[in-house]
Image (tube, rainbow, N blue to C red; front, side, top):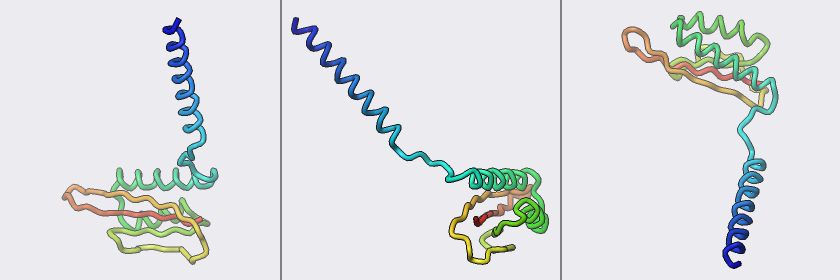
Length: 118
C-alpha cells in the first residue's frame, strides 16, 4: 500500500514540474520584432548584406543599391568604421543595424555596417 502512495506522489511531482516548466516557457518573453515593418527591414538588410558578400561590389555600388532598396527610409552605411553615406536626420528613435565582414581575393578584410532608422 505504501508503494502505491509513493508512485502517486512521484507522478504528482512530475506533473507539477511539467506544468510549471510549460507555464514558465509560455510567460517568458521571446525575441521577436515589434511589427511586420521591422521584420521587413531585417529581411532587406540581411539580403543586401548577403548580396554584397557574394558579389564583392564597390563602395559606390553599395551606396546606390542601399538607396534603391531603402528609398524613403533613413539609413547609414559604414565601411571600416567610416560613414560613407548617411541620410539620418536625427528624427528616428529606433534603429536596426547589421554588419558583415567581406574578405576579397587578396585576403583584405572590409567591415560593412548598415543601419536603418525607422
